[in-house]
Image 1 (cartoon, chains in turn blue, green):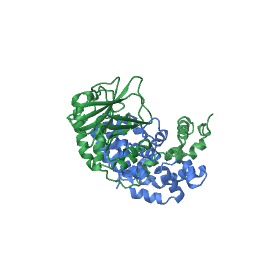
Image 2 (tube, rainbow over the protein chains, first blue to last red; image 1 turned 90 degrees about the vertical axis):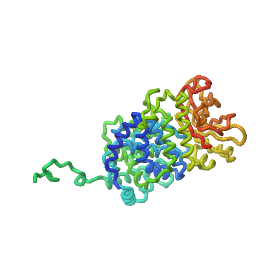
Image 3 (cartoon, rainbow over the protein chains, first blue to last red; image 1 turned 60 degrees about the horizontal axis):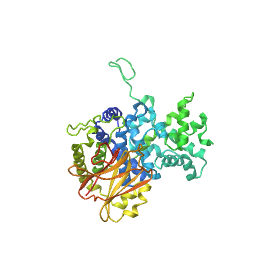
Image 4 (spheres, each protein chain N blue to C red; image 1 turned 30 degrees about the vertical axis):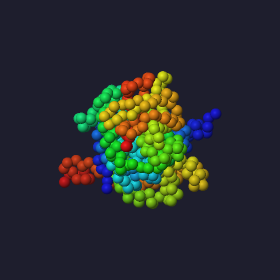
Length: 205
Length: 257
């Protein structure tokens, strides 16, 4: 299953939400609540807590939609960042906060746009992501999962896995770089706009 | 004294931490330092930037899970009483359902209270399937709230109350009265107070208590009023104790009777 077209619709949804359209928030919920719940549950491991996290995340999106900047990334990416941050807050036992923006420097970093990831999100399935992750060296995959789903910092990962902090940060960097390379759409595979009357190589018939 | 992590980072250090930054696996002071570095550095840090955004892809490995239908009702009920930050007070929240759109200035009107109570009643019905056990419900909340679970596990129902000001529970007592617990209550301007309300199904608000000094930890308020017969619990900010709410709700929760 691919997700073609979602980013465009999401942009319109964001505009409607920004205008105060509650039904648009409902549409956003219908579109992504199942993914948001899966992510929250993976982090907190408790269904009831996960549903609370999803609830809080969607309410925060509604409240803080003015912070969403399409040029920094997709609405889906932002939503998932909010869900993950809140889920990790629960796991760490910190106070949940309804605000989602300025204090979260890491979220600001993560929501920068990147064509590789945006294209990957639009075209790949869950099983394809799992296949790519399975090709990573076990220690890199473990580090990535501890960071993303476990909410661990690289310093904590270093302690947990018994390696120097430089090794832990290196595993995260190298693992994501491999993931990026595996997901990168080859130039020749990207759709090309072909002028009317010409074939795919630009030649006239 | 400046901690080592707060000192200016070299470009190589920033690039080395690209994976950790992309996954939010930095300590807050490091994240802050890296944000500042990347924003002001002459170098493009292309390798660093290429990893940003990868977190959304990792979430795609998960198989979506269908939420309980009651969760959608909870979200929409909360959204209905949560103002957007960018909207000026009183600017109308637009809804595609013509009969539902309301101005936030209408919050204090009887009509809106009645409408909210009606919505809450619907939520109460919807929450029937979401009716989780008290011990489990409390256990999934903030550490501050779960710490008092033992005090309130006598079988009384607890009702989640959330909003801009904090999150908490209103809990039926074994005997007369009820208890409101809230964690992380936001501080108010000097002189303002939090006022607590119970609404019946007709939307009639009853003032049941105040919180005059916010505490970022846990606040416990004993209420003389039972929850029986009420549909909604709400909190407003007032300049003084009043008999009818004058401001927007900052916390709200449906009561499942």
